[in-house]
Image (cartoon, rainbow, N blue to C red; front, top):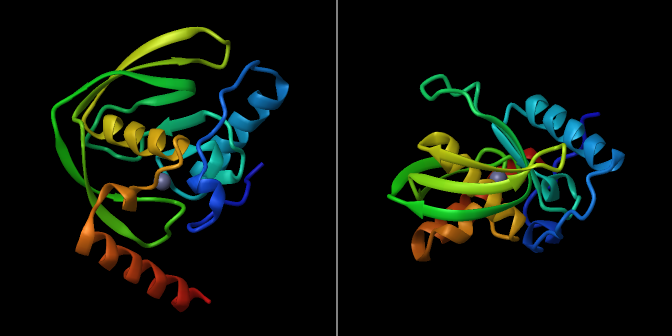
Length: 169
Ligand code: ZN
């Protein structure tokens, strides 16, 4: 089922999510809905709190981004083990429709997370998939991409977003 995507400044986006204790039917349903919602919105990553569910779950599918090898993942209770390098990229966010912000991230991340079967796995992500992961990981911590830029850049991004919102109203 496609669910409604929560938009900034909804407080659920500012709230750190809770750890998942048991991967039950409800979590499996949530993950299925997250993929459907992400594909419907033509996104490449989605955090559970972006559909209003404050749990530490994210989905990624970078298939639409042709220049990097596709990465499709369900990450439950993800943790960063290590991160290195730096890369700048103009990011979009389904919770900020129409806004693009250049953010600096690590180029490589090593991640540990549970999959849908409750199995702990490690992943090494590089380039675009690493960017998507860090963007979604931020969501799970209650951080959005505008929190990753400072001063004038942040102010301009917020002004642009508020203009975009008014145009839609
Ligand atoms: Zn986002």
